Amino acid sequence: MVLHARSWKNFSRDFAARRMMSKVVLFLAFVVAGIVWASMIRIALYSDTWACQSPLSCFSVIWSSRCSKTSNFPDMMRGYAPKPRKRCPIPFAKDPEGLVHSKVRRTPDRLVKGLSYIMEDEPDVNNGSQSLPPFGGGGQKRWFERGESFKLNTTMKVKVHCGFTRSSGAGMTIADMRYVKGCKYVVASGIFNPYSIIHQPTNVSVHSRKLFCFVMLVDEKILSLMKYRETVEEDIHGGLRAGIWRLIPLKHLPYNETRRNEEISKLLIHRLIPQAQYSIWVSSKMVLVADPLLILERYLWREGHSFAISQHGYHHSIYEEANASKRRKKYSRPRIDAQMKVYQSEGLEPWSTKKRVISDVPEASIIIREHTMLNNLFSCLWFNEVHLFTPLDQLSFGYVAHRLGEAFKYFMFPFCEFNSLFELHSHSWDRFEMRFGGEINVA
Image (cartoon, rainbow, N blue to C red; front, side):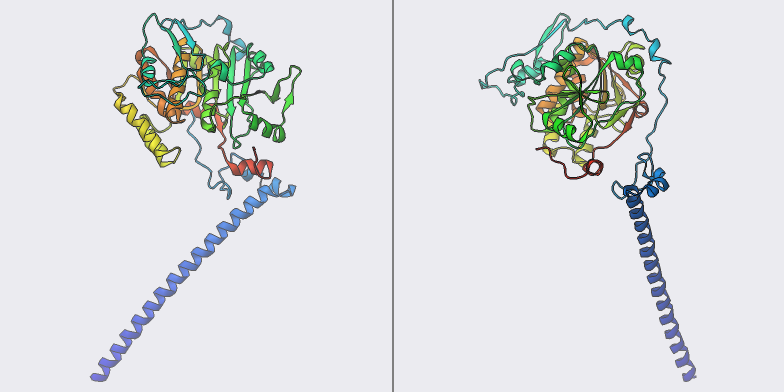
């Protein structure tokens, strides 16, 4: 009986040991299989990237669909491609040739009867009032002046700080100033950093090519880079062209920060091109795929709007956008917090469905506007906030609109239509270097 008990005990011990050993073997098998599977995926991705960049034509033919920019196949240089953006059809007019734009009635200037800009640099005199930083050569603006600039009345003629004075302006060449004097319809963009490359708009009708000035604003360093790496030609009038774009260098930019200099090309079109009646500003990372005349008809003329901008894809409140900007490290957190504290102290409440507007946050990669005095004033005040706080213009748009109240009306169209207007090309050092080769040097 004792022998039988010992045999059963030994059998139980051996069975437990074998069971434990089988679990260890099974675990190791899973680990090895995972490593092998991950290695196979990595080899496949590296082979795909090598084939896309291979000089051998046979690989470019075999892998052409996967090497295309629209492919969702993972790329080791860029990671997995994002999901396709939600798009929706835009009810454009059928034919831009049939639009009689000359008969479109301009929006009357009922509120702001006159708008002028401070054209002399003011001395930096501190008389006890708190002063804002020097305005890029545009005078010394004080806090009480900022508050007064938002007050409108029915007979007002406004004199406002707006970017630069005569002595510290953008510094266009004589040929460029002569060119912009003839521009009433403008498609504008700007490149002030080496990440971006020139993208040519598509689906532009012959009529729009004749009607619109396509203006690409750059600084002198970027122009030098473009001459080396892009196809830049000089026309018979001394202007520089890259495809459909007229390149216009700005010589006296006030900021060392490229983001702020980009805001000059974005928000001060009415200063740079004073004769412009309508403008469409497009971010340099976007490829416009719609005819600009159809855009004006759809977003301005059809329903009598004078300012149109897209909804943001995710946020409605600038406080939400501020928190997202801090998480994504778009700018200095203390500067963003300071800006939000000022707006909160001045009465800007978080967006809610009770507000008269559908959102306080735009997708500011496209701005469609008629150059009325009120819209030009709004652009000046918007730029002033960008100058004072952060270059994140999405944070200040809703604030300026809030301060102007019912006087400033704008059309905020759906984000899915925004996606249908463009193809997106993100900024990237890697893509810039892959396209042109070598290191980037803008010194």
